[in-house]
Image (cartoon, rainbow, N blue to C red; front, side):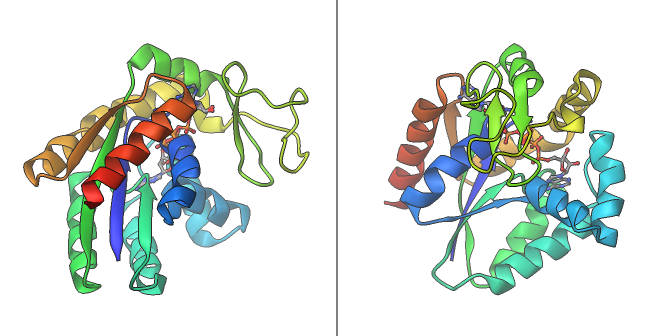
Length: 218
Ligand code: AP5
């Protein structure tokens, strides 16, 4: 099993990139944010509990995520390539991932950090609209739906994520700076870090990430 970690601030474009490169890489795209939102939609206790943290822009407790990761790696085929979007998000989670990977006979092959200036990020979060039915992502300016306010894929009415409201978005950026950004050095010290400029157009950024990942695979 191979593991690629996508790092980057909220709104940096991790999900947008992952959606575009999972196919060409033959990888499984795993978004922990989407998994938690699905758990909430399904009305599970774990989902309802996670909502309290997500609505405040805070990280959901490590133990909840550790269980999700353990199940994921347990169920993944030995030759799978797992593309992690949103995990790990702090040094404790990085350590958990390292030991889980060891237990399942694999390792993180690389961590890609998508670098975007803060003013661009705030604009991306402010303009993001999501489909509550199928999870597709749009942006009012850079990736508008074909018909105003309606999902191209399934026709449901698009909404703004509650954690994309300006106050919560800023809180998430602060949480990222304090808890997640230290992972950039963590992976750099292990010789696994790849840096990609995420300020260009979505297709360009995805292409750059894809190239970097493929080059690291040798
Ligand atoms: P999660 O859903 O993972 O949110 P996030 O990390 O904050 O990331 P985002 O989904 O906001 O942004 P993104 O980088 O994927 O950007 P996107 O591609 O959508 O997590 C939500 C919450 O769940 C967390 O706050 C936490 O509470 C909890 N959680 C999740 N994982 C956890 C963990 N491991 N531990 C603890 N808690 C956890 O792009 C954003 C917008 O910009 C879109 O509109 C898109 O169309 C547009 N866009 C993207 N790229 C470009 C581009 N190149 N040019 C122009 N527009 C672009």
